[in-house]
Figure 1 (cartoon, rainbow, N blue to C red):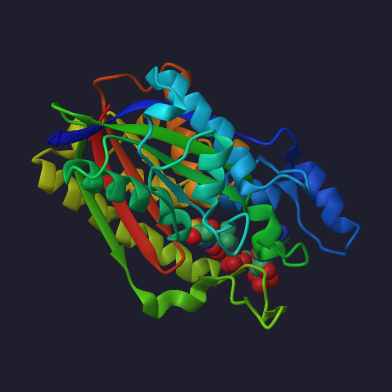
Figure 2: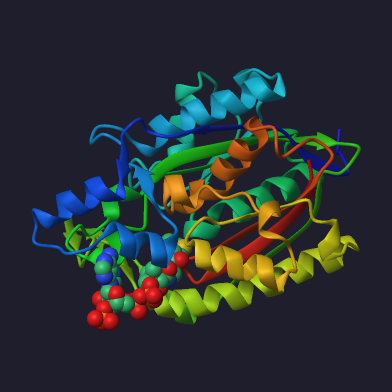
Length: 326
Ligand code: ACO
């Protein structure tokens, strides 16, 4: 039966056990002759630590426990799921989709599965697509996952990027509902900015062509991020007929505490109403929003009935927002 709305009924997350503090990373980079410091990283980004997956651990290995935790929170079994979307830029393979691998590891078959590539905006893109598919009657209970092993594409000889990112996964169950749910969504992209944040390499003729490691113009990303996030936030509030003061929680992409604080300030939101995990997770790209959402929910701060604004921004350049009632 087609439902008018979709709503999140369970959240889950998974971090690889190896937690690397700034001090440890600084010491490791020093052995390569790369100079950085805990003070620089904390002052510029707010990051104190990140989690790195062991070499044999894949994106699907992190996605599956996150999905299982979300299923348990929703009181569902994997067999209840009829759609899986995995937002990732670090898939297990070139193809098939990591979502297919996740489906099989969850012990189910038959439902549609696909990956969605919008880098750090991946989760808000995936949630928007799942919401539309549920409202169109093409799914009733979706697993929407953001999962990354971003450490695999970091250049540990580039101090301007390798200190910023981490690995992890977050997931939600999104179910058809007669009550909202997702109130409004807003997605954007501008491909003219491809070069400011990219992994320019590709696979061809059995070889990696070009550079397979992350490149970023941090200042260009910073400036663009703050301005576009404010626009997306205002658009979803307008669409839902709500005002800034009705937002209980801002859960932005966790890239840099200064970008996040800038976004909260523009929305006149006290910083206490923003879920922050960047200090402990670093930037986990598509995983960062569902990871932060799950941490907020499991800590008891983010509660059913509250209004939550999710905001993503990343390579592409892509950006977007989702406003929802939990
Ligand atoms: N340790 C010590 N010094 C460093 C480091 C480091 N790890 N990295 C850079 N520096 C130096 C630079 O070389 C530069 O030195 P110089 O003045 O002698 O040339 C100085 O620090 C300042 O560098 P800036 O790039 O100007 O530093 P900035 O204040 O802009 O901070 C940062 C850099 C943290 C990357 C910031 O620009 C930022 O957060 N940008 C947004 C990044 C982001 O959000 N990316 C994720 C987007 S989401 C996605 O899709 C993946």
